[in-house]
Image 1 (tube, rainbow, N blue to C red):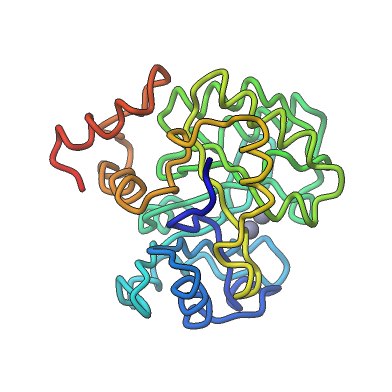
Image 2 (cartoon, rainbow, N blue to C red):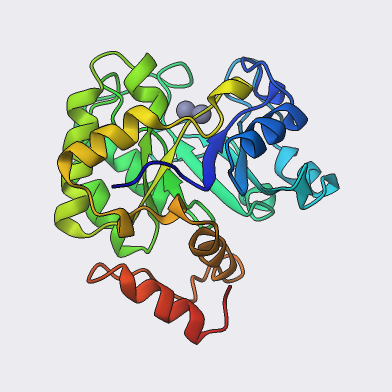
Length: 264
Ligand SMILES: [Zn+2]
Ligand SMILES: [Zn+2]
């Protein structure tokens, strides 16, 4: 039974335009919760009040660790059309260590499930995008089976978003469907807070309770352990190429593959 994560893979600071804490505050909260790392995933520019597209590059001015917490440079890029176009171009996306692509109804009018799925499929096929954000959103209907299959095929990650259970109305049945699909397909996930305030950082109790209720195998949760998550980051090749794919067969193979190429 999984009771905590060691890396929060989805957090926002004041730079996102509608979040209330600074990076220092988020890092302090992460430390208090015994986390080892957090991903700094500011919203892209299409989100009202969101950051500019140069933020992923500007993050290079930040130290690797803040208050003892490893800070992974990243973004939550917005999908802005049905072709999966993102509001952060490859020039800046390539500077991230961890990048999420999300379709928010505030940033574009969602279509039907076929259109949304097409947009999300294109986004996950974008170089440097590691994970699709909150696929459970009832305002953005999509074909979860297709998306989990493709994400897994690419060696990328599915998000189990704790915040959905609190703020995205009626998302729970979709979170359950998503989790069951990941179990069936042996697709690796990250459980994240989607924190918009420091007290939310690392707080994923609702998501973990749901997963535990389903008997979700903890080996599939990549960010349960700092070393495993860090190895995922380190295995990423230069833009355009993933040197090691997380095959669908067995997540326990991941560690072996990573150590075989000398990762963390
Ligand atoms: Zn989002
Ligand atoms: Zn977010």
